Length: 331
Image (cartoon, rainbow, N blue to C red):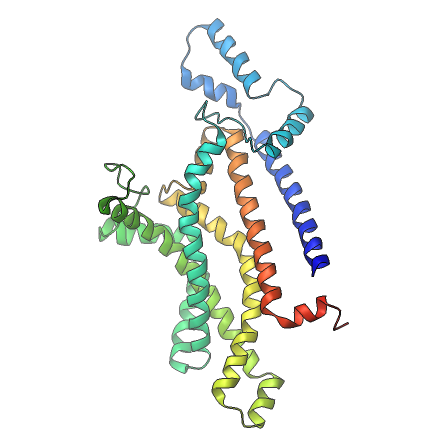
Protein backbone atom coordinates (compact mmCIF):
# COMPACT_ATOMS: atom_id res chain seq x y z
CA UNK A 1 0.00 0.00 0.00
CA UNK A 2 2.95 2.33 0.56
CA UNK A 3 3.93 1.89 -3.10
CA UNK A 4 0.34 2.52 -4.16
CA UNK A 5 0.06 5.77 -2.22
CA UNK A 6 3.54 6.86 -3.27
CA UNK A 7 2.51 6.40 -6.90
CA UNK A 8 -0.71 8.32 -6.29
CA UNK A 9 1.16 11.18 -4.62
CA UNK A 10 3.54 11.39 -7.59
CA UNK A 11 0.63 11.51 -10.06
CA UNK A 12 -1.18 14.19 -8.05
CA UNK A 13 2.01 16.23 -7.65
CA UNK A 14 2.61 16.12 -11.42
CA UNK A 15 -1.01 17.08 -12.07
CA UNK A 16 -0.68 19.96 -9.62
CA UNK A 17 2.47 21.23 -11.37
CA UNK A 18 0.86 21.15 -14.82
CA UNK A 19 -2.43 22.68 -13.61
CA UNK A 20 -0.69 25.50 -11.72
CA UNK A 21 1.53 26.25 -14.73
CA UNK A 22 -1.52 26.52 -16.99
CA UNK A 23 -3.21 28.58 -14.28
CA UNK A 24 -0.23 30.97 -14.29
CA UNK A 25 -0.29 31.27 -18.09
CA UNK A 26 -4.02 31.91 -18.56
CA UNK A 27 -4.16 35.46 -17.08
CA UNK A 28 -1.08 36.50 -19.05
CA UNK A 29 -2.70 35.50 -22.33
CA UNK A 30 -5.82 37.49 -21.51
CA UNK A 31 -6.26 40.82 -23.31
CA UNK A 32 -5.81 44.00 -21.32
CA UNK A 33 -3.25 45.68 -19.11
CA UNK A 34 -3.73 45.32 -15.31
CA UNK A 35 -1.46 48.30 -14.62
CA UNK A 36 -3.47 50.51 -16.98
CA UNK A 37 -6.66 49.27 -15.32
CA UNK A 38 -5.23 50.27 -11.96
CA UNK A 39 -4.23 53.73 -13.25
CA UNK A 40 -7.68 54.27 -14.77
CA UNK A 41 -9.23 53.93 -11.33
CA UNK A 42 -6.74 56.45 -9.94
CA UNK A 43 -7.89 59.10 -12.50
CA UNK A 44 -4.56 60.95 -12.72
CA UNK A 45 -4.56 64.03 -14.97
CA UNK A 46 -0.83 64.74 -14.74
CA UNK A 47 1.09 62.78 -17.41
CA UNK A 48 4.30 62.77 -15.36
CA UNK A 49 2.51 61.47 -12.26
CA UNK A 50 0.73 58.89 -14.38
CA UNK A 51 4.02 57.63 -15.85
CA UNK A 52 5.63 57.55 -12.40
CA UNK A 53 2.73 55.51 -11.06
CA UNK A 54 2.92 53.17 -14.07
CA UNK A 55 6.61 52.56 -13.44
CA UNK A 56 5.92 52.00 -9.75
CA UNK A 57 3.13 49.43 -10.28
CA UNK A 58 5.05 47.69 -13.06
CA UNK A 59 7.98 47.24 -10.69
CA UNK A 60 5.84 46.20 -7.70
CA UNK A 61 3.97 43.54 -9.68
CA UNK A 62 7.14 42.34 -11.42
CA UNK A 63 5.91 43.03 -14.96
CA UNK A 64 9.25 44.65 -15.84
CA UNK A 65 10.99 41.25 -15.63
CA UNK A 66 11.30 38.73 -18.48
CA UNK A 67 8.41 36.26 -18.63
CA UNK A 68 10.61 33.30 -17.63
CA UNK A 69 11.84 35.22 -14.59
CA UNK A 70 8.25 35.99 -13.60
CA UNK A 71 7.46 32.27 -13.81
CA UNK A 72 10.40 31.27 -11.60
CA UNK A 73 9.60 34.03 -9.12
CA UNK A 74 6.02 32.78 -8.99
CA UNK A 75 7.09 29.28 -7.94
CA UNK A 76 9.63 30.67 -5.48
CA UNK A 77 6.97 32.85 -3.84
CA UNK A 78 4.43 30.00 -3.91
CA UNK A 79 6.68 27.74 -1.83
CA UNK A 80 6.83 30.57 0.72
CA UNK A 81 3.05 30.89 0.79
CA UNK A 82 3.10 34.23 -1.04
CA UNK A 83 0.50 34.61 -3.81
CA UNK A 84 1.35 38.22 -4.55
CA UNK A 85 -0.56 41.48 -4.09
CA UNK A 86 -4.01 42.07 -5.51
CA UNK A 87 -4.11 44.60 -8.35
CA UNK A 88 -7.77 45.34 -7.74
CA UNK A 89 -7.50 45.68 -3.92
CA UNK A 90 -3.92 47.01 -3.79
CA UNK A 91 -2.05 46.72 -1.45
CA UNK A 92 -3.99 43.79 0.10
CA UNK A 93 -2.20 40.43 -0.25
CA UNK A 94 -4.01 37.89 -2.42
CA UNK A 95 -3.87 35.33 0.39
CA UNK A 96 -5.88 37.59 2.69
CA UNK A 97 -8.53 38.21 0.01
CA UNK A 98 -8.90 34.50 -0.75
CA UNK A 99 -9.01 33.44 2.89
CA UNK A 100 -12.01 35.73 3.38
CA UNK A 101 -13.84 34.03 0.49
CA UNK A 102 -12.90 30.37 1.16
CA UNK A 103 -15.24 29.87 4.17
CA UNK A 104 -18.25 30.93 2.09
CA UNK A 105 -17.34 28.53 -0.75
CA UNK A 106 -16.71 25.65 1.64
CA UNK A 107 -19.97 26.41 3.41
CA UNK A 108 -21.77 25.81 0.10
CA UNK A 109 -19.68 22.98 -1.33
CA UNK A 110 -19.30 20.59 1.59
CA UNK A 111 -22.99 20.38 2.61
CA UNK A 112 -24.15 20.26 -1.03
CA UNK A 113 -21.69 17.50 -2.02
CA UNK A 114 -22.10 15.32 1.07
CA UNK A 115 -25.86 15.64 1.50
CA UNK A 116 -26.65 15.17 -2.19
CA UNK A 117 -24.42 12.07 -2.27
CA UNK A 118 -25.96 10.51 0.85
CA UNK A 119 -29.58 11.41 0.09
CA UNK A 120 -29.27 10.60 -3.62
CA UNK A 121 -27.81 7.17 -2.95
CA UNK A 122 -30.57 6.40 -0.44
CA UNK A 123 -33.33 7.49 -2.77
CA UNK A 124 -31.77 5.48 -5.60
CA UNK A 125 -31.56 2.36 -3.43
CA UNK A 126 -35.22 2.70 -2.39
CA UNK A 127 -36.30 3.35 -5.98
CA UNK A 128 -34.66 0.10 -7.11
CA UNK A 129 -37.04 -1.93 -4.93
CA UNK A 130 -40.16 0.23 -5.05
CA UNK A 131 -42.15 0.61 -8.24
CA UNK A 132 -43.87 3.76 -6.98
CA UNK A 133 -40.57 5.44 -6.08
CA UNK A 134 -38.98 4.24 -9.30
CA UNK A 135 -41.70 5.88 -11.36
CA UNK A 136 -41.18 9.08 -9.35
CA UNK A 137 -37.45 9.27 -8.66
CA UNK A 138 -36.24 8.29 -12.13
CA UNK A 139 -38.04 11.02 -14.16
CA UNK A 140 -37.33 13.68 -11.54
CA UNK A 141 -33.70 12.54 -11.34
CA UNK A 142 -33.23 12.85 -15.10
CA UNK A 143 -34.72 16.35 -15.07
CA UNK A 144 -32.52 17.49 -12.18
CA UNK A 145 -29.25 16.03 -13.49
CA UNK A 146 -29.85 17.63 -16.91
CA UNK A 147 -30.52 21.05 -15.38
CA UNK A 148 -27.64 23.57 -15.60
CA UNK A 149 -26.55 24.95 -12.24
CA UNK A 150 -26.90 28.55 -13.36
CA UNK A 151 -30.38 28.08 -14.85
CA UNK A 152 -31.73 26.43 -11.70
CA UNK A 153 -30.12 29.13 -9.56
CA UNK A 154 -31.83 31.83 -11.63
CA UNK A 155 -35.15 29.96 -11.43
CA UNK A 156 -34.93 29.61 -7.63
CA UNK A 157 -33.88 33.23 -7.21
CA UNK A 158 -36.85 34.38 -9.30
CA UNK A 159 -39.44 32.01 -7.79
CA UNK A 160 -38.49 31.83 -4.11
CA UNK A 161 -36.64 35.14 -3.85
CA UNK A 162 -38.35 37.72 -6.06
CA UNK A 163 -41.90 36.37 -6.54
CA UNK A 164 -42.46 34.67 -3.16
CA UNK A 165 -40.04 36.91 -1.26
CA UNK A 166 -39.06 34.12 1.13
CA UNK A 167 -35.30 34.38 0.71
CA UNK A 168 -32.79 37.10 -0.23
CA UNK A 169 -31.13 36.75 -3.62
CA UNK A 170 -27.79 38.54 -3.18
CA UNK A 171 -24.91 38.58 -0.73
CA UNK A 172 -24.01 36.31 2.18
CA UNK A 173 -25.83 38.31 4.87
CA UNK A 174 -27.74 41.54 5.27
CA UNK A 175 -25.68 44.63 4.47
CA UNK A 176 -27.17 46.29 7.55
CA UNK A 177 -25.49 43.76 9.88
CA UNK A 178 -21.94 43.32 11.08
CA UNK A 179 -20.50 39.78 11.34
CA UNK A 180 -20.84 38.44 14.87
CA UNK A 181 -22.36 35.47 16.71
CA UNK A 182 -25.73 37.08 17.35
CA UNK A 183 -28.92 35.23 16.44
CA UNK A 184 -29.91 37.98 13.98
CA UNK A 185 -26.66 37.64 12.04
CA UNK A 186 -26.72 33.82 12.02
CA UNK A 187 -30.33 33.87 10.83
CA UNK A 188 -29.44 36.26 8.01
CA UNK A 189 -26.45 34.12 7.09
CA UNK A 190 -28.61 30.98 6.79
CA UNK A 191 -31.30 32.76 4.77
CA UNK A 192 -28.76 34.02 2.24
CA UNK A 193 -27.07 30.60 2.13
CA UNK A 194 -30.17 28.52 1.51
CA UNK A 195 -30.94 29.27 -2.17
CA UNK A 196 -27.34 28.79 -3.43
CA UNK A 197 -27.11 25.55 -1.45
CA UNK A 198 -30.49 24.31 -2.70
CA UNK A 199 -29.62 24.87 -6.36
CA UNK A 200 -26.38 22.88 -6.05
CA UNK A 201 -27.98 20.17 -3.91
CA UNK A 202 -30.88 19.50 -6.29
CA UNK A 203 -28.76 19.24 -9.46
CA UNK A 204 -26.30 16.81 -7.85
CA UNK A 205 -29.08 14.81 -6.16
CA UNK A 206 -30.61 13.60 -9.43
CA UNK A 207 -27.38 12.11 -10.77
CA UNK A 208 -26.61 10.17 -7.58
CA UNK A 209 -30.17 8.79 -7.36
CA UNK A 210 -30.13 7.55 -10.97
CA UNK A 211 -26.66 6.04 -10.62
CA UNK A 212 -27.47 4.15 -7.42
CA UNK A 213 -30.81 2.93 -8.76
CA UNK A 214 -29.16 1.48 -11.86
CA UNK A 215 -26.29 -0.08 -9.88
CA UNK A 216 -28.67 -1.73 -7.37
CA UNK A 217 -30.69 -3.30 -10.18
CA UNK A 218 -27.48 -4.54 -11.81
CA UNK A 219 -26.22 -6.04 -8.54
CA UNK A 220 -29.56 -7.73 -7.77
CA UNK A 221 -29.39 -9.48 -11.15
CA UNK A 222 -25.76 -10.57 -10.77
CA UNK A 223 -24.62 -14.16 -10.24
CA UNK A 224 -23.85 -13.84 -6.53
CA UNK A 225 -27.35 -12.45 -5.87
CA UNK A 226 -28.96 -15.29 -7.77
CA UNK A 227 -26.73 -17.76 -5.92
CA UNK A 228 -27.69 -16.35 -2.51
CA UNK A 229 -31.35 -16.41 -3.51
CA UNK A 230 -31.05 -20.08 -4.57
CA UNK A 231 -29.53 -20.89 -1.17
CA UNK A 232 -32.58 -19.36 0.50
CA UNK A 233 -30.88 -16.23 1.83
CA UNK A 234 -33.25 -13.52 3.07
CA UNK A 235 -34.10 -10.83 0.57
CA UNK A 236 -32.89 -8.21 3.03
CA UNK A 237 -29.43 -9.79 3.17
CA UNK A 238 -29.17 -9.88 -0.62
CA UNK A 239 -30.12 -6.21 -0.83
CA UNK A 240 -27.54 -5.37 1.82
CA UNK A 241 -24.73 -6.94 -0.24
CA UNK A 242 -26.08 -5.33 -3.41
CA UNK A 243 -26.07 -1.90 -1.74
CA UNK A 244 -22.50 -2.29 -0.46
CA UNK A 245 -21.20 -3.34 -3.90
CA UNK A 246 -23.17 -0.60 -5.64
CA UNK A 247 -21.57 2.00 -3.35
CA UNK A 248 -18.10 1.38 -4.80
CA UNK A 249 -18.78 2.92 -8.24
CA UNK A 250 -20.57 5.78 -6.48
CA UNK A 251 -17.42 6.55 -4.47
CA UNK A 252 -15.44 6.62 -7.71
CA UNK A 253 -18.13 8.80 -9.26
CA UNK A 254 -17.81 11.22 -6.38
CA UNK A 255 -14.16 11.80 -7.27
CA UNK A 256 -15.03 12.27 -10.94
CA UNK A 257 -17.90 14.69 -10.21
CA UNK A 258 -15.94 16.94 -7.86
CA UNK A 259 -14.72 19.18 -10.66
CA UNK A 260 -18.25 19.55 -12.05
CA UNK A 261 -19.67 20.38 -8.62
CA UNK A 262 -16.95 22.98 -8.03
CA UNK A 263 -17.71 24.55 -11.41
CA UNK A 264 -21.40 24.60 -10.46
CA UNK A 265 -20.50 26.32 -7.20
CA UNK A 266 -18.65 29.06 -9.07
CA UNK A 267 -21.63 29.74 -11.35
CA UNK A 268 -24.08 29.65 -8.45
CA UNK A 269 -22.03 32.16 -6.47
CA UNK A 270 -22.01 34.51 -9.46
CA UNK A 271 -25.82 34.31 -9.82
CA UNK A 272 -26.40 35.10 -6.13
CA UNK A 273 -23.41 37.48 -5.76
CA UNK A 274 -22.32 35.16 -2.98
CA UNK A 275 -18.84 36.26 -1.79
CA UNK A 276 -17.06 32.95 -2.38
CA UNK A 277 -14.29 32.02 -4.78
CA UNK A 278 -16.60 32.02 -7.80
CA UNK A 279 -17.73 35.60 -7.27
CA UNK A 280 -14.12 36.53 -6.51
CA UNK A 281 -12.98 35.08 -9.85
CA UNK A 282 -15.59 37.18 -11.66
CA UNK A 283 -14.35 40.31 -9.90
CA UNK A 284 -10.74 39.43 -10.69
CA UNK A 285 -11.55 39.01 -14.41
CA UNK A 286 -13.49 42.27 -14.57
CA UNK A 287 -10.64 44.15 -12.87
CA UNK A 288 -7.84 42.31 -14.75
CA UNK A 289 -6.30 41.17 -11.49
CA UNK A 290 -3.76 38.53 -12.58
CA UNK A 291 -2.62 37.59 -9.11
CA UNK A 292 -6.06 37.28 -7.56
CA UNK A 293 -7.28 35.19 -10.50
CA UNK A 294 -4.40 32.74 -10.41
CA UNK A 295 -4.60 32.58 -6.60
CA UNK A 296 -8.31 31.67 -6.66
CA UNK A 297 -7.73 29.01 -9.32
CA UNK A 298 -4.81 27.67 -7.29
CA UNK A 299 -7.02 27.10 -4.25
CA UNK A 300 -9.64 25.36 -6.39
CA UNK A 301 -7.08 23.07 -8.08
CA UNK A 302 -5.47 22.17 -4.76
CA UNK A 303 -8.86 21.53 -3.14
CA UNK A 304 -10.07 19.22 -5.92
CA UNK A 305 -6.79 17.25 -5.95
CA UNK A 306 -6.77 16.84 -2.16
CA UNK A 307 -10.41 15.72 -2.17
CA UNK A 308 -9.70 13.16 -4.92
CA UNK A 309 -6.72 11.82 -2.97
CA UNK A 310 -8.88 11.41 0.14
CA UNK A 311 -11.49 9.55 -1.93
CA UNK A 312 -8.74 7.23 -3.25
CA UNK A 313 -7.82 6.41 0.35
CA UNK A 314 -11.46 5.84 1.29
CA UNK A 315 -11.93 3.52 -1.70
CA UNK A 316 -9.02 1.34 -0.57
CA UNK A 317 -10.43 1.18 2.95
CA UNK A 318 -13.97 0.38 1.80
CA UNK A 319 -13.19 -2.25 -0.86
CA UNK A 320 -11.29 -5.25 0.60
CA UNK A 321 -10.56 -6.57 -2.91
CA UNK A 322 -8.40 -3.53 -3.58
CA UNK A 323 -6.33 -4.19 -0.47
CA UNK A 324 -5.83 -7.82 -1.48
CA UNK A 325 -4.64 -6.77 -4.93
CA UNK A 326 -2.27 -4.20 -3.47
CA UNK A 327 -0.81 -6.81 -1.15
CA UNK A 328 -0.18 -9.17 -4.07
CA UNK A 329 -2.87 -11.68 -3.12
CA UNK A 330 -4.58 -11.49 -6.52
CA UNK A 331 -2.59 -11.31 -9.74
